[in-house]
Length: 508
Ligand code: MV4
Image 1 (cartoon, rainbow, N blue to C red):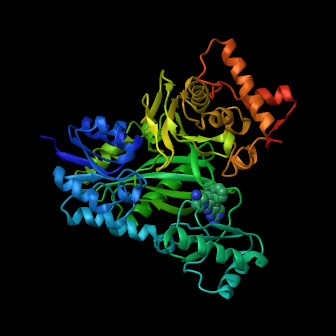
Image 2 (spheres, protein in one colour):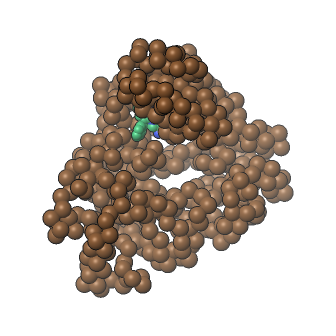
Image 3 (cartoon, rainbow, N blue to C red):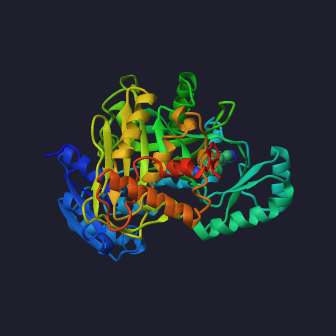
């Protein structure tokens, strides 16, 4: 008889559903999958012990539908539900609905979710707990005069943010008072549209910060530990793309300070289960609380690789009422890990989603390589959900070896039938600022222009032609027309032949 739960429903899809099912099976717990019409043949179903169809392809009829998920959980007689990330993972109503149905929600309490989901309240709570927050308003902005006074006091640039937001939605950077009114209106409008709540607040804008987060684990007995930091500054339109640990930007002294503050913050809000406290670190190495992610993070594997801790198993254990089975002194950071998020999107077409069917693929393997994905031959990448298809993670004894290993596996990794951002990742590992760990949140904007401009057709044809010749010479079979994947950055190859320059400010 398992020590924790007999049966758990995984209220998610794709790679994270598989990740959770694997943890459950290693704990000898039965796994129940749920799925939509669009995921009828998805691989998380085949790995589960039972599977329940929720409804149509759109998330509101399936993965976001609380009554349907609770109904499936009751039919399956599960003891607990793991929400994964995204969808309902930070939805306090879902957490409440689980508890009301007598089903354990594997995550923090609904109260903590509500407190941290309101960014103005989260800031107030952190200020009371003695946690450094970015200078700004403790209360929402309700008038232009109030905004002007606050902004004059802070000094421009300032940033307007949505209280119900996160992830940069509704965020507006304001460089002078003349732009303040329209920015406030735009931020409120976007917040209302995205979150149904137009509450906004103001902060001093930190120039070129780092986005560094601390992984926290807290049990129901009051024990709180950290699992060190993750550097998440390589983002495109506020979407993390590459994460690594340890951060190449902070030293041990700053790491100790940040981890201690994150534990202090978790204790102040009586956090339980796995959570992540995000900070901005400025050029003077001052750090400020940004927001709390009350769920398992996409990028959790790199923390697992350097600490040897299975975070998902810990979540399940804690939710079942068991204490953390080790002390802080038992946790050490060993080596260096980097994660590349593999998206079904086309960097040659402004990173637009690229749904379709996987016709063939070659998975990179070898020592210290981990791929969390739902890929399989014939797999359909649907248009209805986030285009993340997997996370390619590597570990090295130090950052140099991790980057070398990442470069190798990115060349090995081939996916045919859809376009992916693999071509982009292969460029990143060639950029000196990345290789030397000298980057901040402006990395992509500063180093690449791919995300802003679509290449003019002749250049794009040239890239494809070069790749086809390259593939033909090397005897590689191509799919239909031109092989879409390259093993070194075709942009660089064409740049050299075309006389184009790949400066450190991208292609011009
Ligand atoms: C900031 C900031 C600088 N100053 N707040 C908030 C949501 C997160 N995804 C990005 N956020 C930021 N908040 C202040 N006061 C910088 C970021 C930031 C960022 C901003 C613009 C472009 C890319 C960014 C990547 C990480 C963090």
